Image (cartoon, rainbow over all chains, first blue to last red; front, top):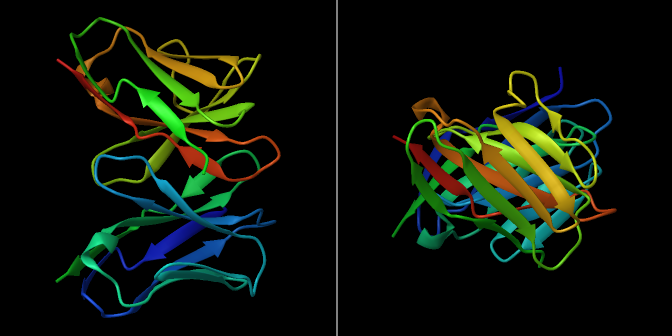
Length: 108
Length: 115
């Protein structure tokens, strides 16, 4: 069965403390691996789409990478405003299937 | 960037009444829109796929007669929760996929509380 598994479930960082979030996937015929950010009480905000192993994309303090088995969301020198739940998802062919997310808290 | 709006953002209704939620793609056309439901501290659960001009496709376990979906134009999809009950209380989120692009853009969500 196709699925994505995110780890850790929750992560607490101090401001400036870089780290990575993991999204492991087992998907036959991957048609895109997506990263979203979700703030409490709001809809997910699109961050990145990755299509092939070796691909990397960056946006401000975030960088997403993709291998044949997993994707990483690297957060460099995070700030408190980066606190949110980060979701990864794969395209099943017609809809997105989401992982359970990583809840990130960045403290000053 | 692509913008999707939802209305209302929050609604409280009495048990037995119906509630309509609108989802609009503001700056792009979307042949396909999606409706999700999210429980507290849980991930998004796909309810149905809405296709412009045709019937929606519902996920297993989702009652199509209870959650009516209409996608009458390339920028608007509506979800009507019929005869709402307290167990229908949840956070409903729509998304729209720009034609020929894989990425889905999400609306801000609608918080439904059924008393």
